Amino acid sequence: MIKLWLALLMAGHGAVAQTVVQAPSRGKQMTQSAPDLHLGRIGQITVTITDVDRAIGFYRDTLGLPFLFRAGNLAFFDCDGVRLMLSPPEKPGEIYSSVIYFKVDDIERSFETLVSRGAAPEGKPHLIVRMPDHELWMGFFRDPDRNLLALMSEVKVK
Image (cartoon, rainbow, N blue to C red):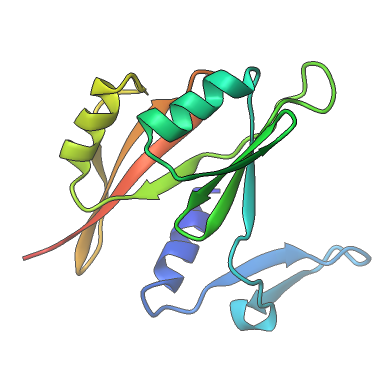
């Protein structure tokens, strides 16, 4: 998983991303170049929540995301053009969520602001990787339903 993440990260910096996949019928490996498949930008991400009113308060007031609308027990926010849907589980006990990484310029100050507003930190922002032209920093925190969220900052190397 980390190799794929690093390959995709490098793809954004001029390298060609390739993935190795198992051929379903013969068990042979085949290489697919990323340009063979073109997915559009992400349109919506769903995060499982248990209390829509509490979640609206956190994502609107703590994170400062623009609230779009509410439809019953669903709440929608704008994440710089990507819609975030907060939804209770469709089946009891079912949880589906991805880590959402929010880009920021000043990770230390942004992280301190979120913690002062009530976000539950998972350690402090830290260096993830040094690239030739920048350093990647991340800081993780949790929402009221314990979903993992993160801030990320690409700091230019001087």
